[in-house]
Length: 114
Image 1 (cartoon, rainbow, N blue to C red):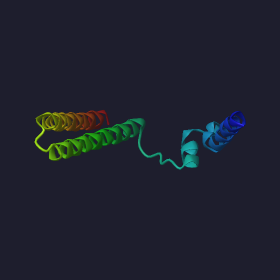
Image 2 (image 1 turned 135 degrees about the horizontal axis):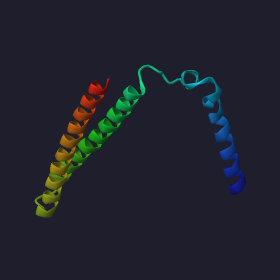
Image 3 (image 1 turned 90 degrees about the vertical axis):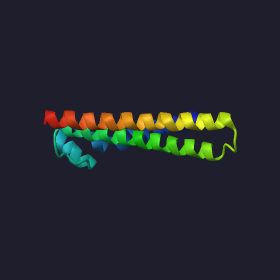
């Protein structure tokens, strides 16, 4: 039964993606069929993808900073946990600075490339 379900899942998922292939019509028509807007160039798309990825990484580092603050607040005088919380906060701040710098560099490179 499990094998049949697996095969049916593969078959139905391949049919579900078929309307979006539309390779014979070209990139513009395929993008319209998939509902993807096609403004700009490849450089613009890559820049948007990199910006979104860097934003996600920045959010992760921010969440780590909040986690470090939570650890610090719940340490209750335990120096080991306080030290661990400080390390997490410092490393997440360094990570945010690196992500922000890479975002600025990426924006600059793509602005010069345009």
